[in-house]
Length: 536
Image: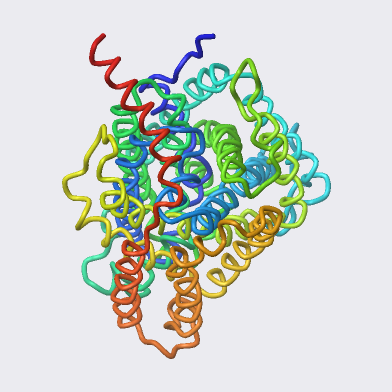
């Protein structure tokens, strides 16, 4: 049976459907509250970090275009234990983002100003979803799943349509708010006015304001690599185009928010005093653009909705990949015979998302704590990409990155700093969530007679020690990053950067060939497909 593949346009729309979610509606406001006008630098820093991380995944993504690929690469280079840690961390972040977007949609609904929508005001109380709101969240999660349940074709048609709207609304907001209120003097005229709360806030805002979270969804293209047309070309193109479009939008939105604030409000309240329930919609009403605020309230529902749909697809493929590493029940990895979709994994993700949001009912808690798990998973990308250059030099590479050898250590260092910027106690909370998954790994190792454990521990040791290291550094870090102050900014960043390079070089010298055969099998199919494509 011929399975219709995802085109380049559809893959870009799918990525943008994930990238442009609740982040743009809240991120600019929160970043401004933290860093003032210097928040625009936070978006540049966050976008650069994610861009350089994505760069290290392009080569291995084209080599191994498979469902849930982000959850498999580390196993190919460093064995089952590191592969499980990376896959579990990545899956936890993805499964959390499903209820995050559902909660975001409900939170925006709770601020609808129309008389017929007064019932929505009871969905949220003090930033926490109420019991009645919880059932609405459940409804969103179920709808997210149903739109993915039958086929990739339904998913891509839905996300392509909704992504056009999601891109159009930020552009319209930028144009209209700039025309109605443009105060470039809000950026300040000296160093203190531009950095009213110091330079450290530029970095802390990347995590606390959801900036890295807003860029994180580039992996949508990689996780669906097996379903993309000509992955040897379109993985690179899809990631690059979607990140550039979203990056330009985010920076322009941040600048628009800064310059649209009336100066008399800043004089009275300062940047820390900006308190909006629905930032851009409130700002539109403040400037007399009531009809724009209506559109923004609607988009505040549509954007999280579209992102939630996309992440159901990502999470199911990540769980499918996690099972294929043979450390979860086999039934989770079964593909539907007709649609070739991991339906059982999708249903399991839905149930766990409902459980998770029942426990954690706050968007802020879900976003700031669990999205950091993605950064832990991303640490393995640069290490795996360079390690495969050594242990898999014979493998077919549709894309070979010229600058990988020097960009990879920079990507690892910046990812480590981003984990630190998430601030204590987020780091230790994320690590504990990762440790929760290890009993599954050891249980299935026990069932298999610990056949792989001895060979898997040594290649993963660098990561295990690293997790202890970054937890200690976060606790001992500067007050600006919520540490106890044993380290002083900016020397805390210098120390972590230098030490992280040591872990990187430890990692690239810890590779193993235990899972190389599986990598060769996937890669051989890519070589055959590429040869056929060139013949055609």
